[in-house]
Image (cartoon, rainbow, N blue to C red):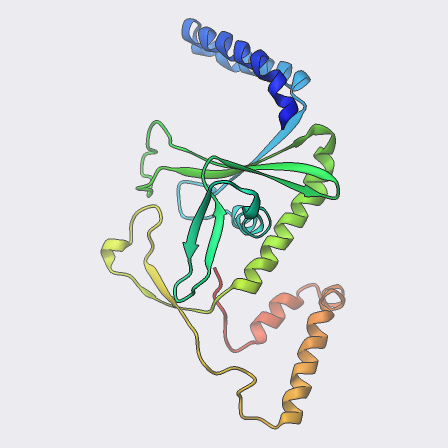
Length: 253
């Protein structure tokens, strides 16, 4: 965003004046001043920012949108980042790369340029009764030109979330879960459950079955998977019904 450098001195002066105001005036004026300052900035700052936090609350619910964005950026933009985090999946030789904190990458979709940055905040005070022993709050921030706002919110973000979900399906692993010891039940990234990756050597291909019958089943499954839009129109609750019909469940990350 090279053209933004020209606005740097203006914002520097504005932030200095605002800091002096906060120091000398009472807190009751802050809300009114911030409202008008944001309006002024809106006239000269041509970009829109959208923030996606990793966690919705003080508890354990990780944002599905954040996870999908993380997968999307890891697959599509990590090769353009200069600072990366490396994770190695257990029993896997490949390294999964993702954006490090305070890194920025550029993505382009249908001719529209979008900037993604990863960051984190550490609250000044820990929230009462918080389960978190790690107060770092990570988030992704999307920045785009305001003229592309509708396109980004209605088209681009849907593309990012859909592709992130597809990546999750392709890379998901079956897992076997068991309870942890009680000392691991509390804390921000701790849980009463632990898991191992379930890698059974048997597959449908190795299943002892008449080859013709096996082929018929595979053909039916392929036809069904390619006709999911048709079945959704005919039976809006088909996903639930289909899931209930299977004698097993698969846990994915």
